[in-house]
Length: 370
Image (cartoon, rainbow, N blue to C red; front, side, top):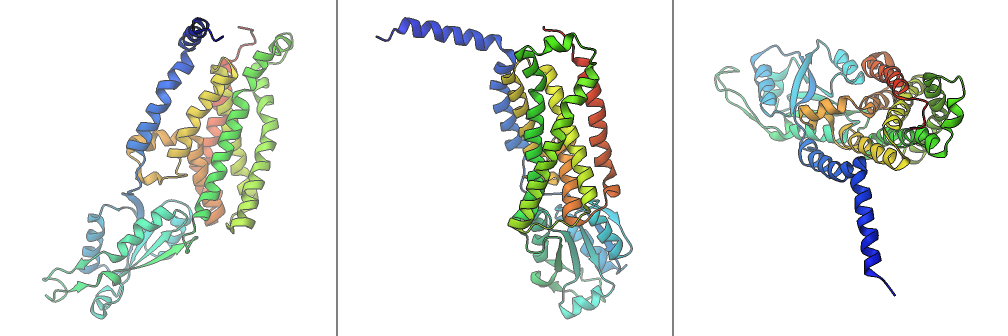
């Protein structure tokens, strides 16, 4: 016969045990709060202030008026100016800007002939960014009556701009998703594997053996992550290989540079897992903390939502995540054939995160059973 007294006793025991586990109790509150803030505040599919460049070959009032009309939409922000379209294309390839507005020298003649006034050269690897700038194609443009010999003209909305999408002209989602998915898969597996590494040793009693050995904390940290580096490289080959053969995702970059960037990110992710393992007291807490890191990595790194659409505070948080830097690198290398030297800032950040993370984890680790 079921005893409600015994059930109540066990229930009180579970509640008290949950109250003593401060990390689990905090996750109950923090995870829904973070999800609410990320989805309600940080995530914005209405992209604004996309960094773009300008090539103005007209040098006249019509071109300047067109430029100000585009600025008024607040969809783009002009960050750079170039003399030739070739220089601007190189900036797109390097990831410095997402698009370039080219205003030709014959803009007044185009106006009279009701042709497209200017051209947009767009990085098509992000379909949301490409869609936002493509929406400008139908932007109306009204010429000031006092300009162009006092003549007023209204250009047809269908002929204001020509749009050229580079690297993904068909705007296929898989081209954008597969490289980003590589970052998420590596984040999930690498961080999880190493976040439970030290904790598992402690729970199984293996730390007793390490106490009596001359192994130093830094040596232990390095030894823990090296085997998983090869696991990560296998995942890189699987994801990019299947993405290429099954979804026709191009691999335009140099294999050696793709390998180097993957090694940097794998090392950073493993280091992040080690840091988590030095804070967690058991494997359950390690998994909870991994989830706490993984959720922002998915939502803020640019994998699902454009980085440019996030508020400034969310962008600052995104810059602290290794996944944000790797997604920029892997999309640039794989899709745009960018040189890793042009992505040196992201490479430097991942390398510095790995070095300082391992040192910090080694200092937190103590070869004691407590």
